[in-house]
Amino acid sequence: MAKAERKYWLMKSEPDVYSVEDLRRDGSTYWDGVRNYQARNFMRDEMQLGDWVLYYHSNATPPGVAGIATVSKSGYPDPTQFDAKSKYFDPKATQEKPRWFLVDLTFKEAFKELVSLERLKNAAEELEGMLVIKKGQRLSVQPVEKVHFKQVLKMAGAKAKLR
View (cartoon, rainbow, N blue to C red):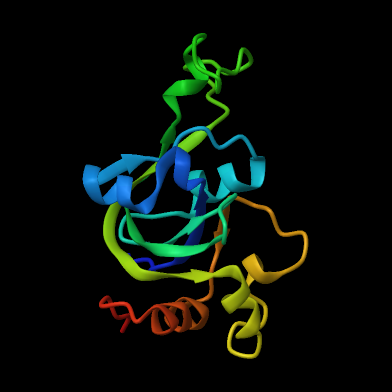
């Protein structure tokens, strides 16, 4: 069986909730609380061990890509859906039929400077078709083409390099 090709993603987090610096401090984390079916499907069905993630700070001034993480555990049931005290509790979810899934991320790199959404939009030619720069695109977990991922790394002056 052939090894699956690495995929690339962008995941949004509000920096006052969990920033790239929080991930650097902790080393790794689980990505709980996603309650959008398309984002859930990406985490449950498509994200795999070793995939690379652009760590995006949303609801920030300015919003933008703050660093890189890797998927360190592929999709598994989000335990917060079963916890009645959690704001992510889902009374329709059961252990036998979980509704929500998550992945684990491991810190890779924080950028010296945020690559702002404005800079991403201004690089429209190089990033044409990248979901995060499309109007109305609010999905918190989204695929990124390898060519776009490489361009963002270049814009950030990232130490990490893709082959």
